[in-house]
Length: 171
Image (cartoon, rainbow, N blue to C red):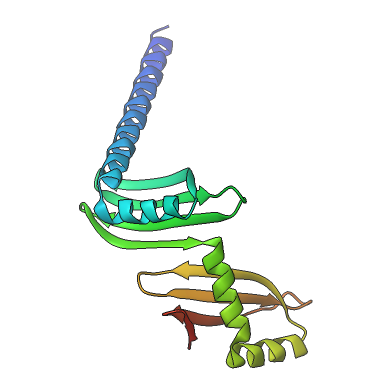
């Protein structure tokens, strides 16, 4: 009987500790969101999205503390096109901030596909039996890295990487 009571007390203690941790995590997340909403750089990007007809739909907030962490805010316009703002705040200062719309990605793909080097590499891969499976856009502060991913029937993978800087394909 004593062992059962001790086990119940231990379980209650563990449950209470878990609830306290969840509450602390939720409070930290709320404080991070409040700090993000006060950040001038983020609010400028957010306003740009609103001006382009996008509305915020979801946010993925990953705080380490109440003023340090990563975030991604997703947007959608009336046509169903998507956009996002990504960033990292460190000790209250914006360390990384980028935004990208579906139109941005379409423009980058168009420029990439018009690039002679890309056309040459893509033809080589096609001749070797590779087909494009995915295109990944990795926005950074002043450029976007584009990775065109390919796979052949044996499951081998290859990729073509390019940097999009100042509205042109580099590298």
